[in-house]
Amino acid sequence: MLEWYTMYMPISGVDIFWPGLVLIGFSVGCIGGFFGMGGAWMVTPGLNILGFPMAFAIGTDIAHIAGKSMISTFRHSKFGNVDYKLGCIMIIGTVIGIEIGAQVVMWLERLGTIGPVVRWVYVGLLALICIMVFYDYYKANKKKKAGDVGEHGAEGITWYKTLHRIKIPPMVHFKTAGFTCSAWLPIMVSFLTGILAGFLGIGGGLIRMPALVYLIGCPTHIAVGTDLFEVMISGLYGTFTYGAKGRIEIYAVFVMLMGAAIGAQIGTVATKYAKGYGIRIAFGLAVLACMVSIILKQYGFNTSATVLILGAVGSICVYICWIMFSGAAKELREKKAASH
Amino acid sequence: MRKRLHTLLTLGATVFTVFLPELVRAAGPAAEMLIVVADSRRVSAGWGRYFVDSYNTNPLWFGLEVTIITALMGVTLGLITDQIMKRIGIDLTSRKIVEH
Image (cartoon, rainbow over all chains, first blue to last red; front, side, top):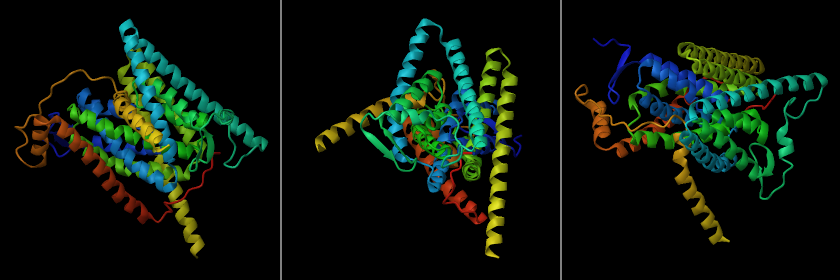
């Protein structure tokens, strides 16, 4: 007999614990809206644990990511966090880069060395992102103590300042992001991050977000919003192509989006109350958890890897909710005090 | 000038259409050929039956349906949750950018 907490999925033919789907949707909505990424690396293992066959887990994941990225992008857009011009320019580089990355994978497949190479490059890249994020924080802290504070506060790594000196035409002004640079800079950066994403078989938000901050020079909040815009476009196309291949469980997408809609609003509004470095550090911790889980998987500790991922997702989610609710409460208190 | 712009736009659109599937495919491991038929015996009527029939008979149409419904759900749920957030009473149109 079916209990109230299970739901029959007509396409994949499995009974699923639906509150689990709502919870996954909520968590990833929260984290995606806050960090500006799709979060496929969190959702796919979660869906698989709930009982979805892997083929359906990937497609369903992409459809859900498309829906929740729309919600987050619209909300970020109202905050002025999306630079559409930058997003559109970057899509060109990303698409071509991913194609080249995928070709490299096929070449390595022919050589028969694909598995370990991809995994260790992934681990190396995540380690690099972690080191960069934490070193940046350390440097910014040092500058703050020394009184070296700019327009938006102290900044650690400023590689983008050097890259902005490249004046190859056409020069483009990105009004929302607030800088002018050669159009080739975002194209080349998105091209390189695209190659890596294609090579590693991931959506790319995990690499693109720090690249937008450190190499292109976007303020953290705008990097988050602009990255989500890219995730939304690729996610919608992904929904169509995976749907046509029969890999999407449409009911699961509905249920997950219910949770994701609330999570995406909380995650996005939380960025209003978080400082750029708060977002960067939490992002660094998420990347660290992802890296350790891959190492664990590499050595056969699959359960530990899953526990680590879900534990990290849960903790970061609680942290984001805390930022949002405490920030909103403070704002309301201040409004009330001002009106009296 | 206009002709050149047209050529560039056409070229851009072609590159975009040709390469975009790779962007999506890279989101997960390449799936092996798999023919799945949804079991229509457990869903007798309603939307469930409609989606199962659509899935079994016309995959392309099913893909299109899922995309449109996902986008519509995203917009609808976004608007509903937006209204809920507005009722809290916080300012949802501006924010300060402070890095540190």
